[in-house]
Length: 343
Image (cartoon, rainbow, N blue to C red; front, side, top):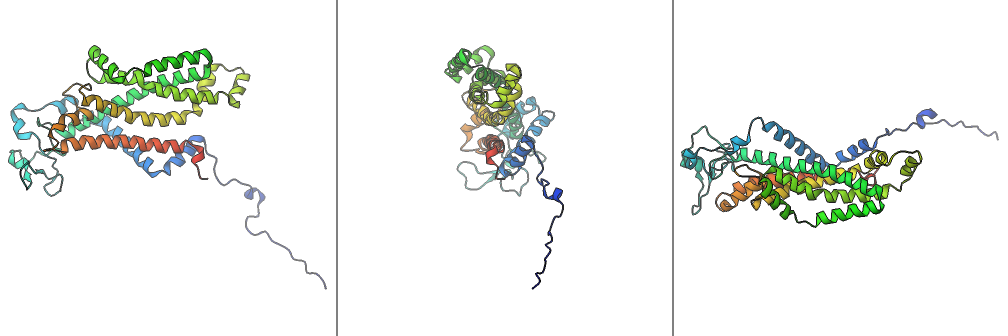
């Protein structure tokens, strides 16, 4: 029998160059982190919410000033005081109606107090007739200002201190860590009280009090990471090439730990916002009549039983802002961790 010779044909891609072509594009570290971050829907929503909040806070400064939020007409306090939110008479929460103590049915507060028909307050008014919408807007602006400025100060001092301490090591590291322990042992309340006596209660004293103690946790974390990275091969190679310690620390080690630093910042901002709210609750916050989210909650807590919206609205703003930073921080932590990738 004559064996039949069969010829086999390559099915599919016939070009060897095409077969060896890498289909997945090469991504940098930041591009890969952004790709992973987009897969976390909660983190993306939180980032969009915070971006909108920052734009709203900056743009609202030209529309709603601090003076507008604090002013009230003393002759018409009885007309505009404690008005519930109103947008339309048909909406269930924004219809301007409220159930007074001892009543079983809701009353139209705007009609009972003789408010002009063209006057509506989207978030209601406080016990002096001031718009809660304006005061919450100013409160969000002040709370974000305090948190972001204090966090930036913590970032600059903490990162620099931690890098120098961790990379230098030896006796210098020991002395610098003892200094951190001494500063951390001072209660924040003592610092705030002393700054309040020297500078008066206000935004400046709160920022300084947060900055004095808040940088220590950042410095410790950066120092621990620096101790780990300074033994890596790329650091030893840089030292062999004669690069200075300063350049190695800030050019080579700092970019490698930037992901952890960014996550730490996202966790520090809500802590600073809550810290300011607690200080305002014990009358060590911003000076009245200037509003912050903490002072709004404190001023309205005596009316919680009768006008719960005065506490609920600034409390919800505080919760949503803090939650957004925490969710974004969790998303950034997963995005900057290469081990979290399922590829």
